[in-house]
Length: 96
Image (cartoon, rainbow, N blue to C red):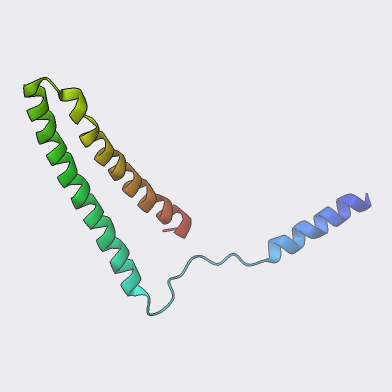
């Protein structure tokens, strides 16, 4: 019975610990702006790489070498997934 009582007391103490929501420190609004710009720049670079890769695939298929150009589109798509997942993961961790 003593073990149960001490576990119940520990649970009561843990329940008293405050859990404040995330709050951005004052004066750091510029960091959020820079992160949003980096995300936007990343998406623009990925979009450009996908377009260039698509052109390379079209030219390569015309020559019969299409399998060599396929990674030029797949890797930028993977980059877009990483950028989007990273931004989403940060949003989940930050609680927004």
